[in-house]
Length: 318
Image 1 (cartoon, rainbow, N blue to C red):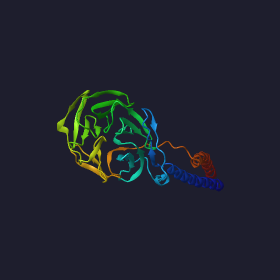
Image 2 (image 1 turned 120 degrees about the vertical axis):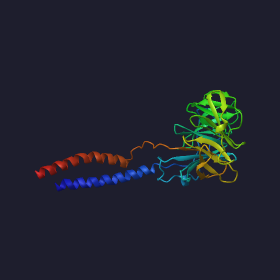
Image 3 (image 1 turned 90 degrees about the horizontal axis):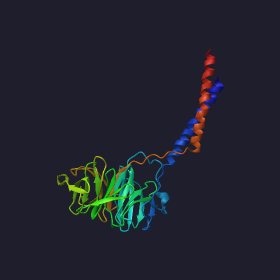
């Protein structure tokens, strides 16, 4: 009996060691790497993918293995001159990583099915952002217009203001326009109304678009943003988000209510910010490592050994 028992204990110890190695290997696979020097291809069209390349200091920008995919991540856009950046931030405001793009002016953000979309102000485009690689997929590419600063999605259509209010389906196909007055530097949909941030008047306006293409302002719902420097607008299901754009000075990212009362604020990681939103990246399906395969095999082997030990002990008792 004791011979079988020694075998069982020994295999259990091996199982525990392999399990620990598998956990360590799995943790190391969760690294994210910052990218820079993204595309400058102005000839790309809808459906094209624009891919950034790794910077010289990529190794120093690699995330620690402790980075968790099940935590909310703040996505933030900023621009300086001819460069734009998309930052990924933890909810304490610390920087996870960023992607840098040359000859881009990335502005307002929107989240659709936990995927991030961004408006482009150097071209009339909406781009889908791959948060793992920094790649940009062209979705809306409407060269009958000039630029997009704002972006909102009502569950069916994107809304973008440039001269008029233009709307597009999720694939980037245009579905008409409506007469619209006033500049918008941010747009959001709260499930009932379309909201725009007007920086010239320092006001967030409310619009009823249920009778499209007729748009009706709801002036009694208007309110001021947290500061006159705010740009971009996003709604998280309960509160609005925006970011300050101040030259040569760090501003704040704000989460705020309908009465402009600030719920929470974070110091921006770079000046001349524009927009902020929140996503929860999903855990990728893991591919078993060598250690994990060993753990699986050991589990299969331990089952009959355990049964044999149990039966032998029963016979000895009898």
